[in-house]
Image: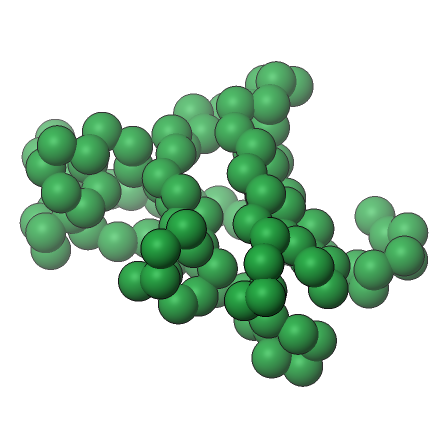
Length: 110
């Protein structure tokens, strides 16, 4: 599990700073099948969605004055070891990002 041992959800969405109340939500990670993680960043909110096997498994909207403004925005993706320990089954862990795109708000892209 990610974070405290009583926290069963291994993934999270964050609008930095993560230590500020309401800037982080923990969620279940997608399964091993191809899935889509999407966020839409606009001047007043950031909307996060995980679609797994064609089904929305998580949706979170962050609103507020803390939404980063254009030019101060940045995307980060991390894979962490829980407490710095390797997987208990001894198997390697892979994250495959097959596509990442940035589309300016209001511009259609694929």
